[in-house]
Length: 252
Image (cartoon, rainbow, N blue to C red; front, side, top):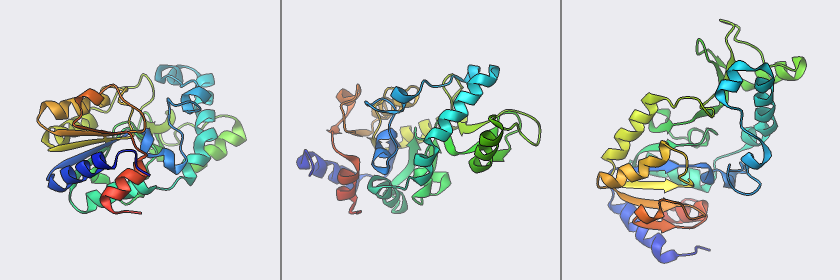
């Protein structure tokens, strides 16, 4: 049951008229897939204190904690499947209505839903695989977990001896400038910017909805809870994402 079907219908009309829509997603779109978000009660940050990037580089103990946290959550991540919200987003991309999906999520579910990689901008990286911080070699998490559980230590890169880390942006690690640049270009070209499941508190990514408004885009925010940027939006839908998007797009 939708909280505000009139607003949802208005959003559907805006989406129908749009020629260059851009979707921006946060952790809220994946909670219906069984992946907890970060800030809500019972979320990931209540369970774990994040390991800062500089600590990961400097301390074997902190690297051990990093991988312990990652593998504690790995089963939920590995078993997660795209939900109705992801399928609705994929449908919009496939139809040509949405030009790009910009995501703060690292779960890889947009790619798993079938969206081509060139249409997805993963601002914070992808946690479904790991890479060497020195040479960039990619590694399967299954192998890293086997070594970690056997040796109580994550392996170093077999190619160059460098440190291996999930292919994500850790706290204190620089954002990838090429991805931010691509996100900004798509944002400024959009006629409709749809923020889905983001608390809009993590910058610089959370500045994208404001940039969209400043360049003339219509802004729609879909999130279970209010955000600090609601006052900028043309429409705010405090709805469950799967039902709201699924009804608008016609996806079960």
